[in-house]
Every structure is written in C-alpha cells, then in structure tokens.
Image 1: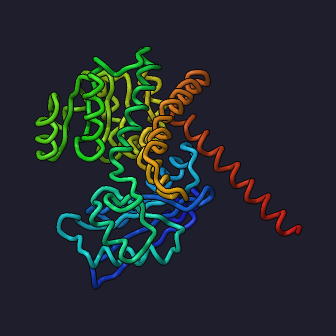
Image 2: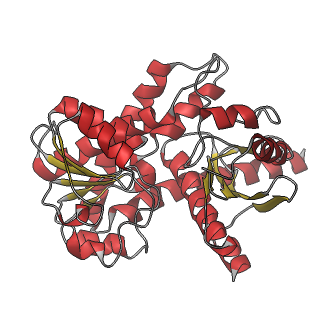
Length: 361
C-alpha cells in the first residue's frame, strides 16, 4: 500500500533514519527535485504510529513541491519528520544525528524549521550539516519564517476579500483565527493593524494569554471556532481541519489560513465551492516562509525587501486562481494544482530535451 502511494505520487526518495543510541526515529521524503533541490522543514511530533508519521511526511513533501512551483521558485519539495515528543525527547545528540542524515543527501534535501523545531534546534543540526535554511540569528538569515508566512497569508486574504466583497481592505471584516501561536500570532498583528474584527482560539493557554494581552480579540474554545459567524475562517494550526463534519459548521464566506493540508479529502474543495465558500489553497497562500527562505540562496545574499515583495505577489496569484475557478466552474484547489503541475511538467520536458541533446552531441 505504501509503495503504491509513493509510486502514484511520483516520490523520488523516502528515507528512514534511525539511531537507537540517541533515540532518533525520522523519515525524510523527497517528492520532487525537478525544479531544484527539495526544500522542506523538519517537524518533530509525537505520532501515534510510524504509519501516521509516514502519511504526514508524504503529504507535506508533495505540498512543498506544489508550493515551490506555483510560487515560481527553483526548488523542489521535501519534508522531514522526527517521531517523538519535542518537549521531553528532543536532545542535542538526537538533533546532531538528524543533521548527519541530512548531510548524507548532499544537498538534495534542504531542511528548515517546522512544528516542534526552533532556531536553537536548527543551530544544533547545523553542527553536522550545512544544508539548513531559515536559522534566525545567523548571518544572511531570512529570520523567523512565521513572519513571512503571515505576510503571505495576509495578502492572500486581501485577494479573497477583494473577490468576495469587492473590498480592497480587511478593515471591518470579522476574521476567526484557529491557532494563535507561530504564524497565527504574526498574522494577528497584521490583521489588527488593518482594522479587522478578531476572534481566536488555541489549545495552549499561553498563546491565548499572549494574544489577548496585545490585541483586542474575542476568544472561543477550539470546538466553537468552526461555528462562529465570521467573514473569513483562518486555519493556522495543524492540517485536516476542513473535513466532512466541520464543513457543515463553517459559516464564513472565505477560508484562508496558514495551516498545511487544511482539506482532509480532495473532493471537499468542490463541496466548499458548491456551498459558496471561497477557499484559498493552502500551499498558495502559506508560501511566504518558503519564498523568504529561498532568498537566502541568492548569490548576492538575502534581501528582505526583495523577498517580501515576492511574497506580496501571492495576492495576484490568488486573484488569478479565483478568476480561473469562476470562469471554468472548478474548485480553486483544482485550478492551483493545474498551474503547479504545468510548470513541473514543462521543466521535466526541458530536462529530457537537454539529456537528448547531450546524447546526440
């Protein structure tokens, strides 16, 4: 079954990494390197089973391929997961060993921050490999990717609001944030400055306290957030929040958030469209962090102004997807996939042509 999925989705490599002496159990998945080296963060999560971890890393890696493609980046898609509780099982020895596994891939996979990993952790990984990006505090670093991701989500929201309400601003719109840590917290700040009315939730009381201490925001329970009356529902926690149950509860006109893999089943994008809900495909709207990190790879060094200008173009990408969706009467997710897949297919043809030319010579 697993090989069937790997084959069907055309994964290039899936690597299991284990070292019992340090307690490391990790998986690195490289979905595609057609457009460039595979970039994707490392997530440390206490998965119930190894099968659950494998499913997660495969879904996330494929999403990174599409994210890079639709954002116009010369990058492929990959991801890594470390199985374990980041609060109690993460050690310097484990992180260094993970870095050694990354190093064996010779730059074919580039790692970065994700859930359960922070800048200090990445500095430890850097002791064993140079193939790490987005380490805040280091020379030429693009800094905390959450800020850039939130900037992109903000512009994607603006595009959806323009399309749905004819509004160039989010001022006065009610936005429900599911998740107030990391990207959700940074997004909260952009929305507050815009004058949006905010509702939020988080499973961590500390994140709720931080948000309420700095912003005017109404707090509801994580269970209640789906059913609140709002203009925009913004999933900024873990994936799978849009499913057959929650679709019935959501009252928003727009779904636009930072979480990866928000839709639990592909057909749900069509259900949202039929229900009259505009869905901003996750890998389109949350690409800001990846775009920002990409600018670390430039020969001239990281340029924040150029990076954030590129991220702001998510607005125009989203407008184009919405217009295509309306014209062709297909879901935004379907249209986004077509655009991403077209660029990858064209690159594959180009590589094949180059290989043929080399053989002819």
